[in-house]
Length: 98
Image 1 (cartoon, rainbow, N blue to C red):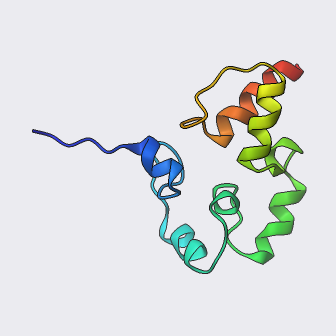
Image 2 (tube, helix red, strand yellow):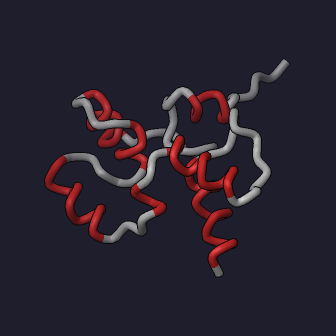
């Protein structure tokens, strides 16, 4: 019997970068150094990189997952709150803004 990795569970627990994408060694080190999962997923691996990354982010990309969930619900987007990722929420909200 083969075992399958439950990427959705790993993602929701912050144990992988994205569905099907494990953390790199550098990202794991940033997490161990206290960076938040959301920051590392956004490419912020230390404070020197933070300003560069944040300057290139849209308002939506700077929001936490919980904030995006509120906006998506207000806009009537249907999703499973247990599994939806920040990236999917951002994409779905942006589609409505076109």
